[in-house]
Amino acid sequence: MTQALAIAAGGALGALLRYWMSGGIGAWLGRGFPYGTLAVNVLGCLLMGLLYVLLVERMSLGPLWRAGLLVGVLGGFTTFSAFSIETFSLMEQGAVLKAGMNIAASVSASLGATWIGVIAGRQL
Figure 1 (cartoon, rainbow, N blue to C red):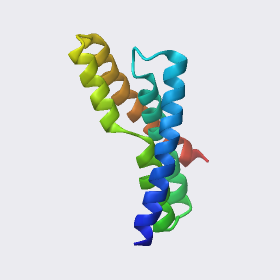
Figure 2: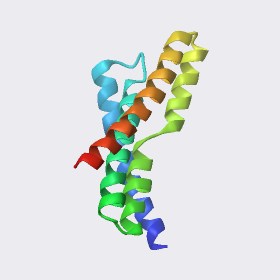
Figure 3: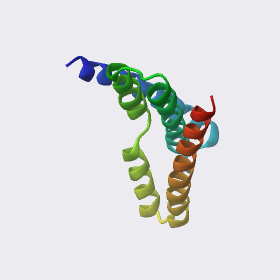
Figure 4: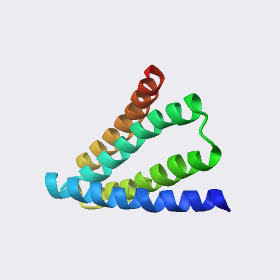
């Protein structure tokens, strides 16, 4: 039960951070493309790779903290469902090229960011 509470608390924090960051980026760059969701997901993947190495491989962080930070905070911060509905909406609007760009950018940048995070964590 304690682990579930750590995940719930972390998830609430991650969701708030996503809301603020995604909204801020959307206001800054415009709403014609899902920049906010893309940025949140890429940053979340970078942090997941980095923190996994630092907190799990290096520091052997306990399962409660690991669950709260990695599953809770980063799970609440990143969002595949928003990516999916925004991409679907672009396709429905006939913006197939933008939808394809969002898919390609999200997948490649997120995987690349995870890789960079892991490499950075192992170099520290």
